[in-house]
Length: 70
Picture 1 (tube, helix red, strand yellow):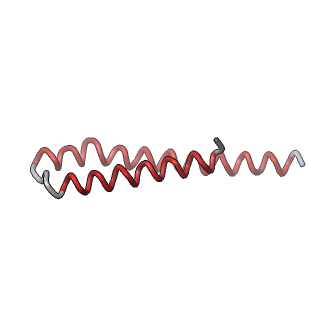
Picture 2: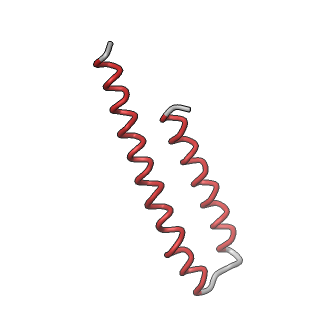
């Protein structure tokens, strides 16, 4: 699996998680759900964003290395 596919898989999985979380929030809306959102979901969002940026950077570096070696 290449970097592009990995980024796509991460994005797809995160979108599925968000959809399920939104569905859950429609029936679970109290202080604990707000804590879960803040303590669990927000860090996941930051981690996914960071990982996606890192994958993009690695992909650019790999592409540049391929061009340099051609």
